Image (cartoon, rainbow, N blue to C red):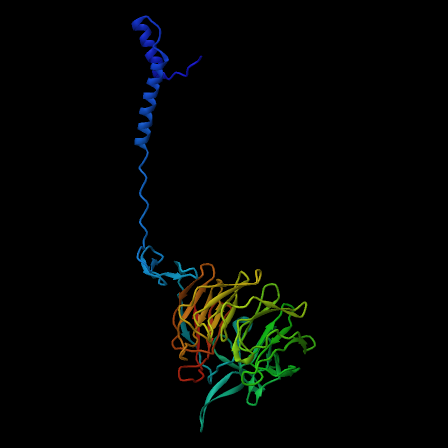
Length: 439
């Protein structure tokens, strides 16, 4: 039998041999000594180990409260300064917006329900829209037939078109060419389409639409063609047809019709080349949740999952990650939702700080989305600005506009600034104001 003897045990054994001239004590003594030594060592180790700290008390124990983001207790739905509320009800740090608005050279007359198209070299093209004129019967919205170009310092006339229009679309075809389609003229819905002649600085008629329409959408497809879908025939009479313009021959051809006739909808070109159409007013003047996707290669529409809430007068913005952010609207002004085309699924985004409809949504250079103005439920215009951060699912308040507006346009310029043009004021008049936000 062998024993594993500790140094202390060996010392005790040698001492016994020297003093008593005898053999070492029994191994039981060794075991007791080793046991004693181990107990002492364990005690020393235990004394050296720090005591465990008690778990911290929850920051908010009162019912109806939660962490405001910085450890401070806040009522549910509210966050501490510098933090925003996510769709999950938690508070996270909100990136500040900053920047300021500057009033630029005003237009000669007011513009609302016009179209704006960014051009090269930082220029911006403004077409049509209505202005408010006084008549013996009172104020009247009158369509316009002029085009103006902002050259960075002032507005320059860019020709006129034969038929005045508002509620039309203007699509950039590249190299300064812009296609105007349809709209609402003095005699009702228009079939006429116009093409901007860059060299002559005038507008020339091209092949007309197969169906007169306004309040429609126009989307430039990946192959350069333009698809027009839906719209209004006359006083909220929805249109189901869609048609495609080919710039090479300059002609229109019928496309597969929408699955659901609609107006006041949105159309968003997805990263894979398909087009998402969502919401709007459907037959029976009912606001719809329906959404559908157009495949240009197959010339076919397919049903997408319906939106989480019915909407019209909303916006839809393509995010950098390929999702689509739908914001506000007439039915649920504070509502925001996200569509994932890979999963064909909708999910909630954080609610807006201020509900709105007839607003604008502009994607900034850093991928965030700036929402400007709009109309409250009571019909009054808003002057508030807020920015959505998709990476954090949170809104941040931005600098307010000098006055409330809706039915305006907001365009990101080449240098990252945002230009706001026209709109309707609180006295229901079209504005000639122009503002630019600089980060």
